[in-house]
Every structure is written in C-alpha cells, then in structure tokens.
Length: 570
Image (tube, rainbow, N blue to C red; front, top):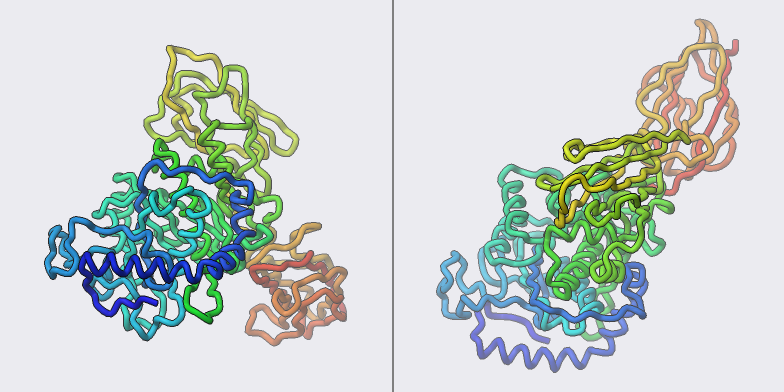
C-alpha cells in the first residue's frame, strides 16, 4: 500500500501514485464489493435499493469534508481528490497567495501544513475522517453513473497529529478555507453546544455564497441544539437504526431537518487481513445524507442550494408513526433518493402532506383545490411561515381541525406574510381565485409542527399532595411514559399518621427506569424503597406523615408506567 512519507508531491510523483493506487485497488475489488454490500440495508431504507436507476452527472460538484484526518492511501479517496491547480505542488511556494504553501490537496489547520493524513502512529485503525469520506463515496457511487467524473472531494484536517482524541479543534477555520476555495458543499460530522458570533457570521457567509452545508445533529442523546448543524441554513441530520427508529446515541429535537441510516455502517479498509471497520450514529448518517444531496445536485444542475431543504423534506418518508416519542423531532423523515429524483423530475405527486415539515407551493395550487396537512404524532401546534420576499396575489382559505372541532378563516396576501400558528391535527389549505394578474414565481409556504419536550409531556417538577388517601401515577395513562422523565410528588397526611403505598400497576424498564420513595421531603432523606421492572412491588409504609416519590427514566425502552394508591394509616 502507499504511504505518503513526504509532505510535498511533484506532478510526476502524483501521477505515478495514482497509477499504482489503481493497481492496488483492483486487487481488493472483490473484498471491497463484499463490504459495500453489507450496507445494502441502509441504502435500501434511503431509497437506493436494487431497483434504483443510476443518474448521470451533468456538472462537477465540489465537496469539502472537514474532519480529524484522512487515510488517503487506504481508500479510493485519491480518485476523488479536488486538486488546487492554482498551486504548483512541491515547489515550496504559496503560488495562489492564500497563505497556504503547497495546499494542492487540502490543508491541515491544526498542524498548519499540507498533510491531511494521520501521523504514522495512528495509521493502523481507520480514522474518523476516513470513515466519513468513505460513506460519502459509497453513497455517490450508488447514485451516479460516473461518480469519479462528477464529484471532487477537498479533505480538510482540523485535529492535531498529537491529539489523543477525535475532537475537532479547528473546524471553523476549515469552513472559512472551504468557502475561500469556492466549494459547493461542506460536510461537518462534528458539533458543539455553542455558536460564537464569529462562527455565526461564517455560516451566514456560506448561505450568502450558496454553499450547501450538511451537519451532524450530535451524539449526546439529548434534545439540545448542536452547531453548526442547528444553524438555520445547515441541513441538520439525525441518525436511524435498521428498524427506522432513532439510533440510540443520536440527538433529536425541533431543529432536525432530515434523518438517515447510521447504525454500524461498514467502511472499506483495503489493508490485507484487516477486519472491516464501522461508523455509527450521526457521524455516519451525515455523509450518507450529504452523498444523496451531492449526487443529485450534480445530476440536476438546476437544483440550487436554496432548494435543498424543500426537496429533501417534501420527498422524505415520515417516521413519526413508529417514533412516537420523537414526533416532529427527527426532521421531515428519512431521506429518500428515489423520492428526490421523482420530485425533481415530476414535481409534487400528492396533495396530502404527512411529513411534520414541508413546503406548500401556493402558486401551483389550482383555485378551488386544496393541500391537506396531516402529520402523524404528538405535538402542540402547526406553524406556517412565508419566506421574506414572497409574492402572493390571492387569498387563501384555511380550515383546521382540533379535537373534532373544525374552524376556518380567509387569509389575505398581506396576512400570509406573518407566521400563523394553529392548534390543529389537520389543516386544509385552499387557494382562492387570483386577485390581480398572474404570478409565475413560486410561493412556498413552509410549515412545521411545534414539538413539546418529551421529558415534561406527562409529568414535570414537584406536585404537592395533601389528604388522607388518593391515587398517584406517572401521568401517561394507557400510553408508555417518556424518556428523561424527572418528576416528584410530595405527599403530606395529617400529623401523627403514616403513609401506606400500595401499587396497582408497575411496568418500568428494569434497572434503567426507577421509582424512589423517600421518608421525608427531599431526595437526601432516607430511602424507603427503590422499584424497577415489571413486577408489582410490596406495600411500603412511611415512618412519618410526609414522603417524597421520585420517578426518573432513561432515554429508551420504556414501559407502560406505574400507578399507586396511598392511604393515611396509624
């Protein structure tokens, strides 16, 4: 195999390496094919099954991947490298005047040199950036007829050679560099909790330049924004398992745009006698989604960066019926490559929208006809927003239903420029006859469900209860309780009495979700009992007239919940 021992390459050396690499690649083609087939399940779920007809690229699409390092000699990444022809490799000069000497094939911002490969000490296992790039290449290779002719990859290293972890330290410097190199897409399979003002300005610049950004939602299991993915312009990707359920580690929330498979995807390792490597969670889902977008952006050159959000959401397959705990929090659904092709070729196929997020083209709606919004799942409201600058020449009749009650109203073009929030499970949007002239520009009306924090869906905070007897339950009724529950009930009975607790229902995930009973008013009081699992607990009696119940649950695998009867006893 090829190892780059020199940091600078001449044009002749580069050509020789590419020829030799292709010879090496053919030796491992069978093993490579077998490993790729291991991901058939993921691509089938993403609408790229055996019946998918590959498309022809019509323009070169340049993609920057910012990550920790790239094993160029261990994958076929070399065949996709985006070379900077304004730079003469190996001459020791900054030929293009961008402050980077010999940045012919990317740049290492952590070590300030042109070597994006990991140091020799880290060369045996495939590093994170290599895996991300490989999943991206696998994806475009399943969609495009000639991916090597259509897609160029600019590797940008943002993690120091001496680093002992994969944490990206110079990611935003990498974004600035990618923008200066005029790429079409930037992939960030990493994230942070905060967004500095300078970083926000950089992401705004990406929007202004029309650069597509695809980012990882994060792998912290929480409903919390991560950046750059949660910035409005960036496509925010969550991860799914093989059953289309939220991958356990994946973040979720209102800000997710789309989901993609991310459950132990196999990446190609060309080293002899080496076992396959894997990548999971949003780090894997992000390059898969990005690969779909990049491939179809090459095949459909009329597709603008500003169109991407609409195309992926309107063609997505909703997930909320099987991810009820995360209704509206896994984006519009799972990305669908075939659905995107159909949408780009034929336009809207049905007047009914079941995705929790999407766009309605009011310009293409025939007067007297209607769109139906019928997203599945538990959520508070549905919000509709008209993008700034949209021109509308007609009224719209809105009808909505909530708890079997139907209401309606007429909105004028001026009224539609303001956000509209409706408490509804179903909405009908009907176009009225045009008031003046003919408007040919699309009028996209964006909608999305307004989600609730699942951790407070059924119970929240501390509830004070007084009386001689009563019933207490987790609050979910016949449904299963939610993840991250953190609820308390403080029971107080008359002085001189004790409290007897007798459970009538009990179904908790064993050892993960627990119910505590404290002999007092705080969680630092003596613990009377800790219950978990599906078996009915024994009767518990407090030592005094006050007791605290504390119920907590993990992120996944929940039961039906619990219910108890308390009584004041002597």
